[in-house]
Each structure stands twice: as C-alpha cells, then as structure tokens.
Image (cartoon, rainbow, N blue to C red; front, side):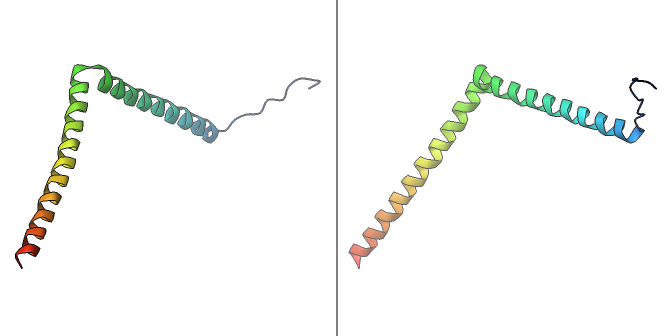
Length: 84
C-alpha cells in the first residue's frame, strides 16, 4: 500500500454509540422547539395572554389577602392589649 490510506473498519458498537448521540441530539432539539412554541403561544395568543393575566391576578390576590389578614390580626392583638 504505497501512499494509499489504510482502511480501518469500525465495529458495530461505535456506530450504535454515534447513532444514540445523534438521536439524543435530535430529541433535545425537538423538545427545545416544543418549549419555545409554548413560550411564543403564551405571549402572543389571546389564550396565552389571558393565562398570564389570570396568574398575575391570582398572585396579586394572594399578596393582598396576606397583607389584609396580617393587618387585621395585628389590630385584634392591639385591641385585646388595650382592653386588658
């Protein structure tokens, strides 16, 4: 073999490993695309924007109720302290 490239056979386990890496890479790309579509739908469609507004409204309600009930409990403690 004068100057000719040597032929190196590849065993089947190396091919399977490469195939598994390519398959995993394609799966992760498809998952990323699916997640990005979900984000695009969330911020650009009517149902996505209504979902965001509903979530923000619920968080706002939770904060308001927390502050409201804490204020009422503090007022009740002060009123009991003044009666005694």
